[in-house]
Amino acid sequence: MIDNYYKNENSRTNYARTAELIMLKTFDDVVGEQNIDKIVFEFSMNGNFFIYPKYKKDYKKTLNEQKCRDIIKKVWIRMHDYIEADLPITKKVMRVDAAITMFEERGMKDVAKLLSFRRTSKVNLTCFEGYEIYLYGSVANSTGAIRSFDLHPYKNGFFLMLPEPDDPDAILDIDLIENLFEAQSNAYRLAHMLECENIADLNEYVVQGKTTELILTSEHIFDSQLSEVASEIISSSKKFVFLAGPSSSGKTSTAFRLAYTLRRYGIVPRVVSADNYYLDYAKRKLDENGNPDFESIDALDLEQFNNDMTALLKGEEVELPYYNFKTGRREYKGDKITLGKRDILIVEGIHCLNEQFSWSIPSEAKYKVCVSALPPLNIDEHNRVTSSDLRLIRRLVRDSRSRANGAAATLQRWPDVRKGEEKNIFPYTKDADAILNSAIIYELAAIKPYAERILFGVPRDSDEYFKAKELLKILDFVIPISTDLIPQHSIVREFIGGSCLDVG
Figure 1 (cartoon, rainbow, N blue to C red):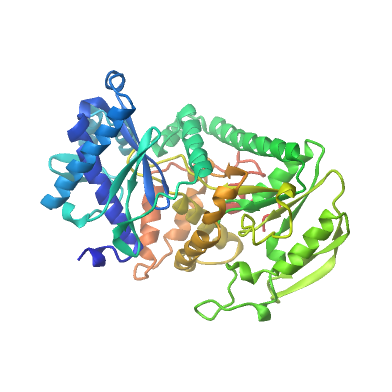
Figure 2: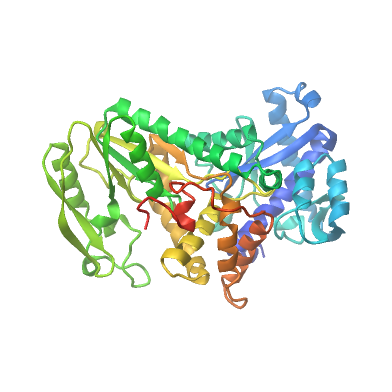
């Protein structure tokens, strides 16, 4: 039965949310609700959730590393007890004002504040053994739906580990990427410093008239990241910067902004898209559906790219190609360059972190940058805004604006895009010299009006309607802001339009 329940992405999301519910209830049992400030679901890595338990000050004074591990062990045991008992999970409808009062009395201020921005008069709560919580989305009907999970202590928190997509009896590896973990943690530290850790906090900025302050601060934070990376590139004396990231991470904007940051230091940068080295359409290998594969590294003319880069490294002149997507052919238009003493070449593309892509360039000549949208802004302490959902919302808006693609078409292709990322990008993130977090704290408020209009156009009878509805529920919590004050060079502009950069 669990195999059927776990057969698709929506079911796996419900499975994870059910495991989260049981874990939250169990923490209250083991630690005591009065000793818990909040249990924060910070981010996921390889499908596993990193969770940070924040205890009340007096209780925290009694803890050390071993006691924290003992707590997690006790939670693990009690979770198994609940699962074996196969207890019912139910729903309860409550008036919003009553729910706000209840969560305030329980010290769950983030949830209470989030609900204060709800337009509806009622809210659905999830209930289990007397524990009532607001969860974004559906769960299983009983605790017995959970068959496999684990808890793995790490640093100041732990990972809730879930089953593999193809085998609900096998737990996913943590596959910990330390530089990515640090980038995610830094994002949360900055959000905490700005007192903007969730959507309710963002809404407070808006209603208090502090939108301009948040926009300028957020953009300055990204500028600071760029300056730090630029300084490292210059100190390393490397001639090539290879920049990669998943779909809609803002690679193009980041590449140009990094170039302009380098100019501040007297460097002459040149941005090149790896897409210009695509093989001609007729020479392309076909994917499993019989279409030319744009995602595979084999779609690129690696030999020509490496010949050109080697020649540049030797100080020779090279004519760079241009790929014409309309004709499906690579063209040459007289774009000749050399790399002088102060020149740096920035190459951006999905395969740029893969050594196979730049095999001929010695490691001492290249600096690798991963651009990833790592949102620090959760819905509330228990409900996350995932990197995948943020990037999908970005892509929906950009595809509609610049590529005339409807929302249903973009949603339909997204699972294949994600598979390509898992194969071609994420395995190489650990090799990056730097990770640039392109998630901008205020962006959901800026992008909401564009995304809602597009998502409401998804037909109710389509396979993509469920995902569209899920994204609309996230956006429903957000108070929109005017985009007039967003700088023209902002990454957000790559998606909503109005960018001064050549982002297509």
